[in-house]
Length: 72
Image (cartoon, rainbow, N blue to C red; front, side, top):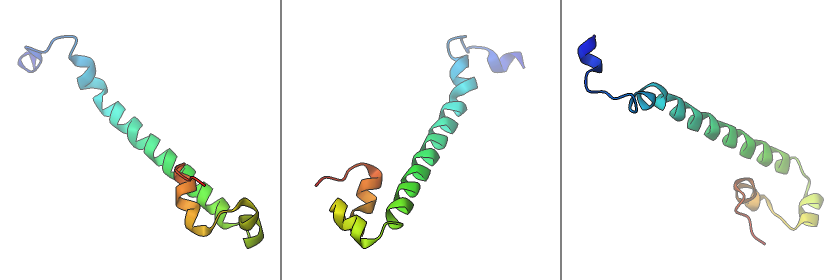
């Protein structure tokens, strides 16, 4: 067991121990963003034609609005 840790400095051990946590954190952040986009799209889909016309948007704009890239 001692030969496994031989040559590994203390500065390198946090990346070995916590590198997977960063990856899990990124995946969880992506899942949260995806759920927020889907909730936005669901809410937009629940609007009727009059509301969409009042806001000057169409169903073709929903994905851009959910991503935050929509421009008038």
